[in-house]
Image (cartoon, rainbow, N blue to C red; front, side):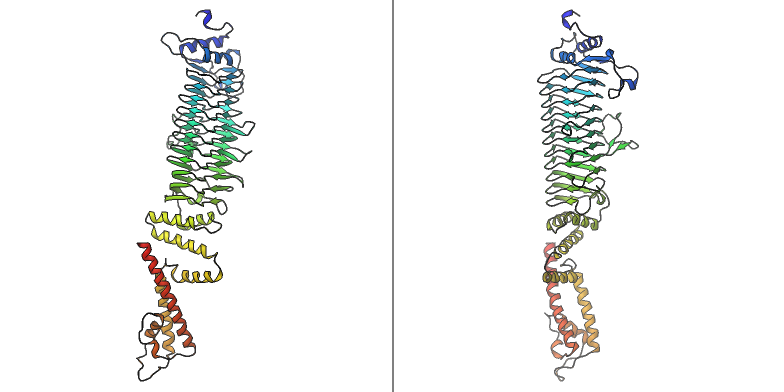
Length: 521
């Protein structure tokens, strides 16, 4: 190698890195001790594995030409990189692959254009990558970043991967700033551990966004995940993940016997206005919320919402004005009264993911409506009717009318209570026959033991107490008994009572029958 092809002041480690760059091969500075080689550990690394960040930048920005028949690439493993690595405002046309490296100063990739970038198992004080553009993947797997990642408005050509990484909060309390981030394919953040807010406001993911097995912690702020107006073309997963770094694809369903780790969220989740192409999947997730924190899903849009976390003991679940096609849930995932808001929540079908009897579903609505609102009841009834569960839909409508009755003035409340008692607001038509039969039997027994005298003994029909009682109860029929006998005393009042009840029953039964016919049509 001619002397003008490399700087004169290269150390032996940097000289090896220089030659590996021209050859496009990996340059490995590790030994054979795994503890000593751990970039995230505390074992000191000496000069034999130290390279200067400015020499790395020199290779990437003004590096030598490749050896004949080779393509240049920066592939370093187990290096201690001193000084700040600043590649801002540059275009880098070679792949960058840094594994198990220990950086002593932040890495800056602001306004940088790159191909594929891999930081695997590295210790980086901070990563500043605002408006970074990559043609391929950006991988930050198994890295420790004490002052977090800042990559607003970044454009990632294919996948963004931060699996198994540990991100801590910066001076503003944020562990990951990705507002306006655009990922061409998948965003994999499985078993990610954060201490601080993840801010992905207005971000877009072209594939799936996986937070399986992640631990999101923001004890010093309101939101553990702030993804206002997030767009995910496929699905967002907050679900258990396989706790193993040996799986080729963690997003695959873990095989039986594989140890899994559930998602833990300490702090609120803000997904207001988010859109999901396939669905929002929240399964077996633990939400640790303060009283003033919430899982806010206001105005989200998704073909499917799978909501089956552990029931949060505190905080709120907000689904106001959300629109989903299919709701998959279970009874013990929803919080109690005062912790749930469903006003304007629209769904087409229900598919319980666990035991969810109708009584529990009605309690779910009651918990979401501390003051009466007909809309959640109408939505549930429509969903049940759409799947052919008409009897359950009628029970829901009946529960709605009973909730409404409690807010009425005394007189209307008494009239509606009578309608409920007699016919269940028309949803229990068989009750009309029961009351009619009961009154007929009671009246027949009374008049059998207390027969009234005839008005005209010569023209009076044969005394039939059962027919006489029926003539009193059926105002639209004349059976020839009511007008032939003269009642007095208690019998007169009982006859009047039966006539009034007969008119009321006839009115309610007619209205109930009409309602049944209309519902069936």
